[in-house]
Length: 178
Image (cartoon, rainbow, N blue to C red; front, side, top):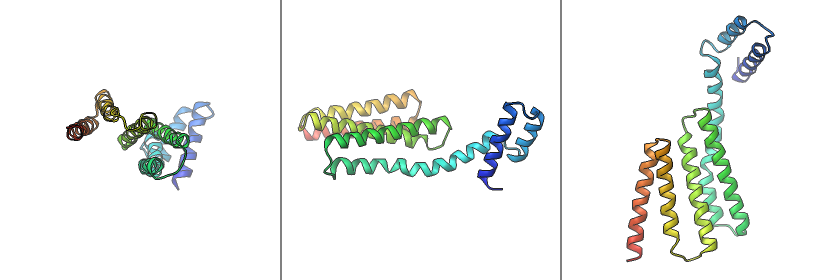
């Protein structure tokens, strides 16, 4: 039986169980039968992972699309920032969905969200203060934000990425302004 039909049957059995249309023992037996003893959470999680694997490439494409929109299009500034904010909203929603369902690529969604925050802050800085010395400070503040978020969620890789990025940015600033 294909996965979609099993998912529909499992949802129907859950409906029967919730509304007491069938005894709880019979519903548990049917759930064990249709999930092959794995439990409904395992089975539904497996279906979510298949959907997320389709969703993940779309999420990853947001970074190159953002760069293209910012630097290689003739769109108005309002349209560019609107698209960047929409991309940010999509990536933030992806992060929360991935985290809710304990998807293994949650870090990718978080990192893309943080990269889009960096892009948006750089774009806004260039729009309001072109050719200013404020840009390195904004970039450094973004990397500090990355470190704080990594520390808060106890994610070592994000902390390492933020520290390395912070160090390289500091080295760039020192060589550029001396």
